[in-house]
Length: 238
Image 1: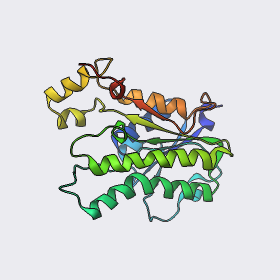
Image 2: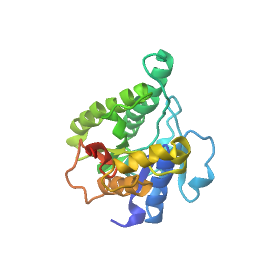
Image 3: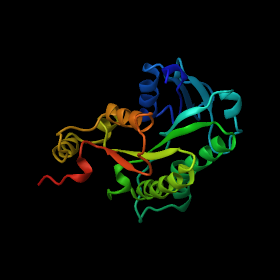
């Protein structure tokens, strides 16, 4: 396919992972639809088509895309905060569930209703290795990420008859300025020691995996959850 004829929409285009995925596609000459909650395009969306959307917003997608059909859609949006059963707050829990789970369902429902997906489109949800591994002070976050397992597997059935493939990428603790600001040097060293490759995963690891799963080279992988964590979640180095 001509790169310029390939259209991809990225929800959560202003976050670190969303920005990186947008740039990955943009540098390859694809048409990028960057979607976020900001009312005007951020500087990082230069050269991309910007759409402002959140749950409850008017449906702008048909007007924004015109005759274009989306060959790929990536959900990199989400919410994160620290809590445990002692600090549990029902309203905050519902808020993070809405951001991490309902957002995907609502936006995809609209795209399907508007018939904006190309035949055999590829869909990818950014989850986290913490959907499968317990971590202190991440109770609500882990619960909502775990819910994505049922979401992706159900969508793979609902959309499989149309040739649409749906998968999830599970990043580990990525080597980003935010990670290095939030974790101590000792914590980072422990994470690196527990990873078979001896380093933290990078944004490129995530982008390259998303790029493959959402490409024509992916001819049959669907309903899968693939970690981009340099082996961390399946290693026990003691």
